[in-house]
Image (cartoon, rainbow, N blue to C red; front, side, top):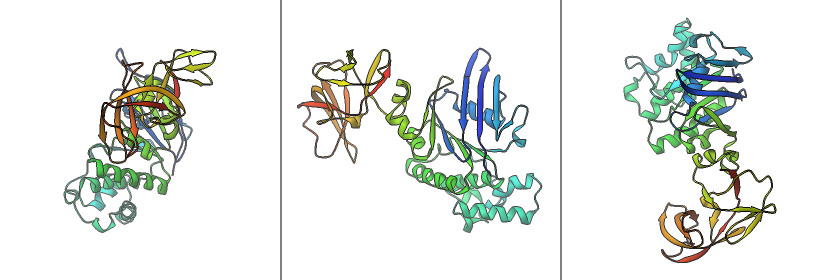
Length: 340
């Protein structure tokens, strides 16, 4: 089962503090949507409103077209998975997964069959009789996911479920989580502050800041065509190059480029991989101040001679790194113009 979700003019106030301001958002049935932003941006608050744990100050939340006003968490077609997996240590994995079904009054045979199906889905069918303390962190995360899916929610809510895992295991679980979501088809709404995680798993990303939505789009659109400086800087690094606009052209210290739809108070933004020793337009001479090896590229810091007050970060391919203190000519490609 799966369902679409709608937020209409949702606001959340805690006294004088505005946690959410006029949130309008549509989530498609079967979509993997990620709410991304720094701590305190309102992403978890929005998730808790969807789950029924908070009542919005104003606005409306719909799941599959039904108004959720006054509907408690247990009566909503949602299940929430938290970072703390909250598994019962005295129960077997099968009983942990079947717990929600037990609370719904299903008989033991029916709920055990469903639990075994979910354990097989997450690759732990052979450990049905084990206890949680016998599992690794990643395996416990899978059990929590199996338990959440066992009750057949129309929308699964995930509040930073991978935050307690180390980097290698987190990346592995990101791939597994995405594969499982594709298999079951349930709508997933996932909260994280990890940009790489968001790009790895999301169909669409919602970037939030100070209780507002800054940007919405596919991972590619958010990264390559951000709608705001905040979104651009939060979703990876961004170089900002001083510029002026004359007769519809962006004028740089050493070159000019044509641009459409130039915004007010424009800033020329370049990702580090779009700054290099060749490119679409010239940024001028610069001195290499430092370089660090990152496996597939060198992360380089350049100081432009014409604008020494800024530093440009470039990701140069292996074998293309000059000596530190060397003077080179820098170029840029794929620029993005955003309002200051």
